[in-house]
Length: 251
Image 1 (tube, rainbow, N blue to C red):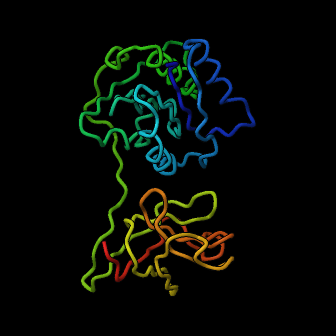
Image 2 (image 1 turned 180 degrees about the vertical axis):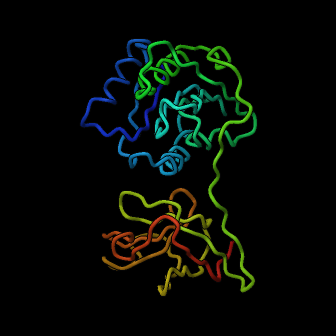
């Protein structure tokens, strides 16, 4: 099977940055299949990139190389990582972006050396892409650089049970549809409270009329707040960090 390299960045597609990265990858790993996951992560939003990566990296076949770059500190003393975890490889900055893979038991990380002449403002092209191409070509991760024993790992805040029995959580991200994804695990029944709004946890968007707010279990296994045919972020004013409560749910 041809090697797969996926790409997740905050570069957008208007300026040619993604094309430069792809040029390096295909020059060094010409047999690779390049998969564009997304290039419209909000600029410098490491948390959004981390949560996006968590959704898909294990859905690809073993041996896949995931190149992920949201890198506000490019060119600084922050390390560049290559990670092997669950049979896949990940390449990107050591800023918490690669946490979904680093959290797994047995994950290994190494520090990618910065080549002489690398641009201090474009490590995606000059540091990460060459390392990703090496891994796609069959290089062992330990051959990339020295072991890193203390990579930066970020975790999603866990919901907590309050004395009154309610489970208190928060919105952790808002997707492109304006759906507010929470850190509350899927539940059967129950009611979501956000501000003064009370929403029963239903099965799917079609369970309510167009324009109506709804709470439901999303495909990630987390409860989401949505507006059918609309945006919960715009219509309800929810955003990352908004507190939500779950009451009366059955697990």
